[in-house]
Length: 263
Ligand SMILES: *[C@@H]1O[C@H](CO)[C@@H](O)[C@H](O)[C@H]1NC(C)=O
Ligand SMILES: [Ca+2]
Image: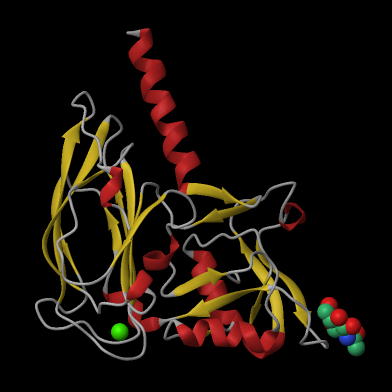
């Protein structure tokens, strides 16, 4: 009885820890995209705090969005969007949204931590983007079995989509992904359009594979009870899209992934 209790309590702790992930010391809640009405945080591929204002706007545009306004960021924050990293937003303002007060972030305050309008637009920060078109896909999924598909499936997906599906099953369950249809613009290294699988509850840690082209990916099994899928399409050339089913499997069954199948 006691052991069960500890296991259940640990489950909650793990869920919490996974929902709030760290990357480079940045506390980052990435349940956000579907909750935050299209507002999301990006850093440069080179790492934290590398973007000038001009580059920051280009990053958002590349993903089919725009740089977020203060009001969009605040609206997102009010429904749980929390990132401990300063980024540009509209009109050269810099700040970050804090939901949970913490000693190491936001000076113990809650709200938009506002660095104000920067006079020097060559300063380097991260960025907050807004992409309202991405609201129609993704989401948080807790059903034990579900079919997920690219936006608009079975029609071809549109350009400039970004979708995040966060799957969270009961503690003690794992997730089996099984692909039914797969057709994403084919290109070396899948730089144009892609589906990414993360063996974690965010798109920060646990990247397990990036897929494009028309070969059905192998089944994938999560390590724990959470998984994230990210789909992105660029500004030209579409394809048929994808459809997959995820299925809850009992943790006591030992499945493993064939690492050779990962791109
Ligand atoms: C503006 O910021 C950049 C990057 O921090 C710095 O190199 C540059 O000297 C600053 N320019 C002025 C005029 O302060
Ligand atoms: Ca494309």
